[in-house]
Image (cartoon, rainbow, N blue to C red; front, side, top):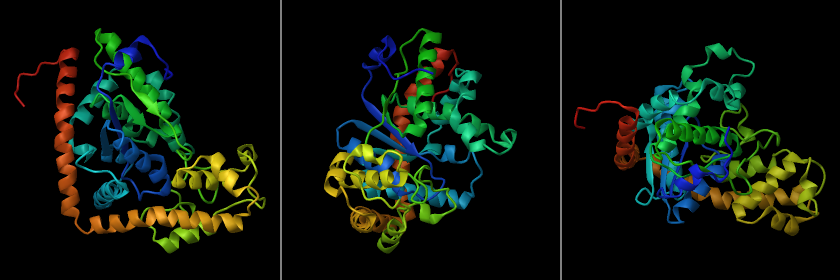
Length: 353
């Protein structure tokens, strides 16, 4: 797999308009991990003056079976979370993936560019089918990374904010772009760069600091949901697993202390401080005093988002209108890119759209 280093391809990609694309699956309630690892960063990127496109990837969600009504509800809830966190639908494009057919059409072309060996190396498919009958998994789950590449390339995105767990998929996107350009002798698709930054890009479970905070974890105590009220947030932080040692005097002291490291990372990300600054302020503190401090901070940052989400969810028609408007704007960017891709590949287009 390619690494994000400067090559003639990436240098050529500098000629493309800077554009950020990212998405979140509406396959379950969003968590603190989604907020710190994605939504908070999406808002920051919106404020940097770069064109930003954000998507509820409902086509990815159905790679495993979803209850139709629940999927609709979760898609609207995800949109409400984006807006409540600070995404302005007038400044960013916000839509759900299935409303723009270019994603599916370009994904098929990329299925024919990607190599089977590349797909076989995708560790996330192996992780999701571990201990299960892999042959019973959907073809969509296996081809998920190719659709992700299409999500990004349909907009000629040059940057994607991702967590560490998605970095391999982004490397595949780069490989597909490079191979397409080489196969057809063009410089059409940019070689996208990952944006991996921040203290808590990978927020861990409150019950097990070695596992990622997940909306699919059976234990609700393992995560903070964006729909949790202030009392629930505070209670979950108070009950979060820790070790008996006080906070160390240096960042190195967090090594081999996954639960302590997780809570410090969360505090740093919520407060906008570095981990070193949090450690300097709290060195020697017991968790009996640090947890209430973290709980107060989490409630102050998250409660306004929860309140606004609840307000937005009372008007699903307005959410649908916002998503539809975003889809129209996304379509206006993606359609010419898709049609030019078909021209490059050699497909005849005789019907006016």
